[in-house]
Length: 306
Image (cartoon, rainbow, N blue to C red):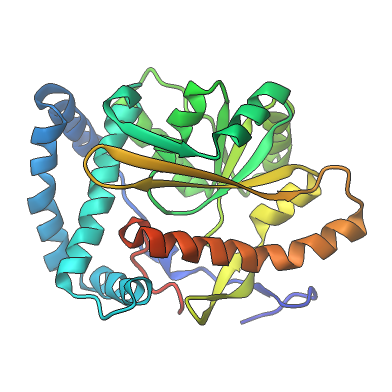
């Protein structure tokens, strides 16, 4: 793997997850939304079982990756039933997105831990970078932040940004989702503008991008590559950084966890560089912690350690 001049940082070729992108289908999304809104959440959830069984039968590579990860998170050998539960958790969270994007958060029992961090950002209007992962529901975090008066923008890989917009349009054409695509000339300027407006800017920091720089961290006892970009963007813009995890806990229950992570405000270039290095491993450690707390919530269906 090619290395950059920066010690310990690799320049990452296209990772496996980009070769098997998540696909959106407007017609299917509209159908699921219609079923959810017309028949209710309970009836719609019954459809998740045959859907998950289908994918369990015909996605052998994803099932193998699921069992590889779950064996680490559960501390025992994961079986087919564990992979089914992994798929079902993912499907349940996607279904709930239909209700959350239609401003129906009242349907859910949401416990927010670290709410004072969101309240402080909203009150001061300073803006904050919120690092997340492909764990649980970002939509529940967005909805919880919205109820507390915080504006949220999401920064993501351009192809995923396009698919998110299509998904939102299929579910609720009237909603405005603030998504900033990465990789454009003005991407960082748009991130800075959102922060200057006092918004929370969310970035998922557990998947690298083609050609992006990565750093190797210990994750479940083995080396794994994590992208350096999200932390470095926050450092460059001299912003506070928090972690967020929106865990699905079964039924209609969610837990939102927000934690202080770093504060780059008022720091010099040398200070920022010294702060950055240990933050990558700390992020990996906190992700591992929540993977053990809610193992079926990390929606990783490819070989993360490859």
